[in-house]
Length: 429
Figure 1 (cartoon, rainbow, N blue to C red):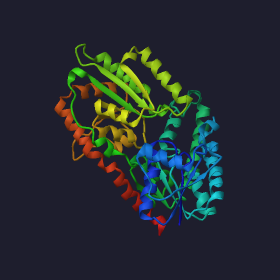
Figure 2: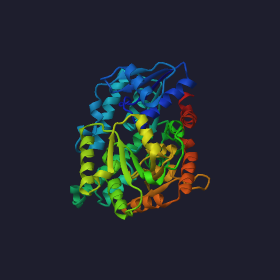
Figure 3: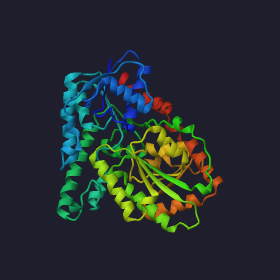
Figure 4: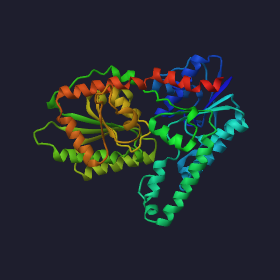
């Protein structure tokens, strides 16, 4: 039996790649006699280097060999290739990339683990495969439709479109047509796994195949953070506020800086010092430009001395900051899941996340009736909630941290393996 994963960026170090390697490890334990294939566009590295990278980043070593099929047309799915009609361009590009993959190897079981739903009918009806998909984020969502419908500006809805009623109507029609086609191709899947309740709701409304759709929470390396001792630092040392996330527009780090500036404005002169540390990865020149813009924003608000940026730091350094932090910040609207949120909670920081998406529905929820963290939306509500957390007694903060830690065990690697194998079982019958 040949089992193939379609993951064009398998050498990246994000949460999606952690899902890929944990899924492969789980399947190899259960089906050791199968042949495992990964379709990847990482042509600048060898298969051995990819496997070494997975071990270095995620501490995952596979027990059986994996064969890599290297694809040369990955540029067809890069957003920079399509300045306009990006969703459609990338989706059509994925069909050509999928065709290149199919021409090199026809598997028995095909799993799209990166969200390229337009490849599903290709492998099912032309390749004759049983197909499954793990959806991290729907390519289009009902929230995206409402943003365009209400003419709200956003990182995927340019201001010049929001100001023009005709262009907004044209874009809305384009989005509705795309959503209809996306629903058709997604419904080809024999098994669908989604990473959160938020993603589940959108996929059910778009793909309409609830009978074979399950939530499989992504594997978070919570065990690594549980060895950080829970303690309350002496008040004289001040408080660290830490944010974890790539420097991408949707992560909305400017909201963190503006809210922090408001918090500093309200702070009493004799209260302990506060420092905001933004930790994240820069993938390219665009991300580096965003970091420079954030530095400029800190300077414009007069808080540059109180804000630090840590770019592409080693994991041990990340753990060290989390061990010292009082508050973990997250500001992305409709984050599909939020691995960084889980890591903050496992490490013992008090999380303050955006009141939407996965953090609201799945992660920052009461554990056995007890509070595990806080949610906010606007600059003011973030600033007020940060001030409230800092005003709590050391004992109360410690109790919230303990509750949060106890709640994140459901996002462990072991839990992922059980739910993943149960979900894909149908593909192997």
